Length: 77
Image (cartoon, rainbow, N blue to C red):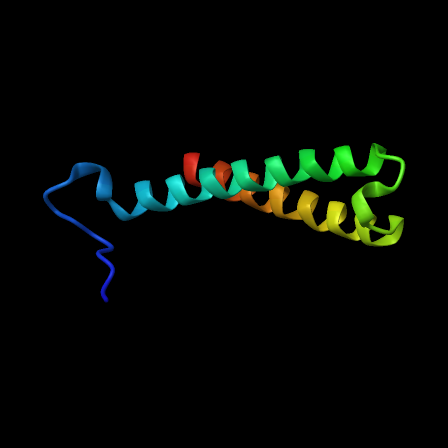
């Protein structure tokens, strides 16, 4: 099985555009996860997570969102 990284016949397959699309998808995934964790934090039993674990997951998710946003910003500059 091989992956095609660059398809010259398809203009949107440029490497930078693919990277941007991947970063935008990651941003959406991380943002959705952050929303989920925020909801869990407000539930009476934290959806089965102990508060410390939930705090660590939230912190990690915030960091990934910031890193992805920074990468997208660098690409736009």
